[in-house]
Image (tube, protein in one colour):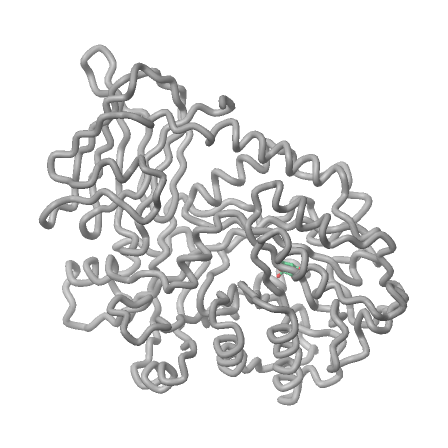
Length: 510
Ligand code: FUL
């Protein structure tokens, strides 16, 4: 518990510094950050907020929706969650290791990208690095000739699943940890990972550090690391202690009810941006990333700048991040995973679900089973949109059909400067449903602030559900409703609202 609290503290301290990347393309007009001026009125700020858009990497990442984590390493063999770096590499010996089974299982569960813990806090490297002997090279596994990173990367290519690496900044084994030399050591490790294994889609930097009061203090040269990543893997997003993706703030799998991808940053520095933009790297603003509300009008009104910094919701399928035999009966049920899905993906976040392979080097059967049943539950609900074929009436809007065409890029929006709208749907007959799906076209920003879904019964409009933010995806569950006529009222938006998708579904029916 104490370690957890320490960890949270150090993490939130580190979270005081979060970062914003510059838009890669120099021609791009819209950016993923904006400065606010002291002379800006409330209306100016709201307008500017609506113009902040994701970078190309951020947009691609958001559309993945469900991603996976593989926590695997020396802890898998010691039963610990945080190794101390003194473990004997000889303990590492996954006799039935099969990276293809991991990735195949993930893919079957609907996971579109996975991140491997190439090095956790214990410093043990899952690839035969030249930087230390504390690696698979010193283990009996494949007589020291194995390479977990290589096999996972190859399996990802085979199954067309994105590939990411977790490289823990905190290293309890490296003798140079706590000195400037560590930054160079870390750069060498990153360079190996980013050059020897093909395309890398995500680099995950953990904020955890449990050194305690007498522990080693390390100043991480994040700027140097980001520069390297941008140069070697320009398509990758840098997550958590990085400029592109923000930690949602908990490890429960539940995001915020109101989740804004545009959040305030309070130390945007024009000079630093001008210098660093030439090198095409990231800059480092500050702000709180853990409150209940990060981006409402109230929150952005005193900001110095705003940035697109979307939430990643990480959670483990088991109580721990690493595999422990004794937790085999504590695997999250498919129903729990479903609830997590609604509260992460359905709340404008990307789900990062951890599936820790066991000491054999395989995803355990029970985890695999829960994942597959979870996927089935999702498919049962989401494979058929009950609004398909509806006739849509939107007096002050255009391209209404785009909401139902299964093409994210096409979208409905309002005419002129209208920020509110009423959209009516005449369904193809009467339908029973209990889930609403909405998607804004975030390539144009996140705008919707308040909406209500109503249905007609006996000539009266009745409320089915309501919400605040939408963002990339919003899912809401409610008591089943049977109706043939619906209307969505957008009550407030920061600029012309957009909708790429509108869906209604009945839980548990194909
Ligand atoms: C935390 C780490 O301390 C855990 O071990 C795990 O890797 C989790 C995803 O992040 O900060």
